[in-house]
Image 1 (cartoon, rainbow, N blue to C red):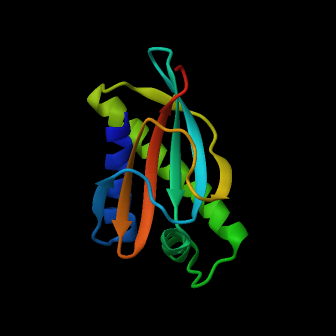
Image 2: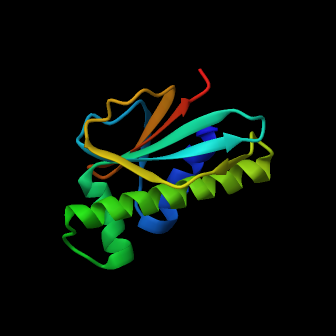
Length: 142
């Protein structure tokens, strides 16, 4: 499941942001804006997908969609929710196309601004320039 989310996040960086990227295992150590979306797998299992980005990454998204050079915290929070929705929604389609653990998605929620100190099972961080986006997955059934 994290594979489809990773692919969707990379596609977002390539096709929306239009920048080169690097992927590494684990989470960012930066202060982040964190949102999550709960996923319901067709086999009945439940997961939580986290999207955590530093302010620089989310400012790139804000510039892209809103043409704002310097967004306030409320706007960056809204962009975090929208980015989570776009990436996880795209990942859902990727998983369906592959018949790779298809799932449905719920409403995105904003968790907090701060260090990513939440429980997770697996995570990847995508770096675009100096900015970072972490995607993480937690099995809620364990």
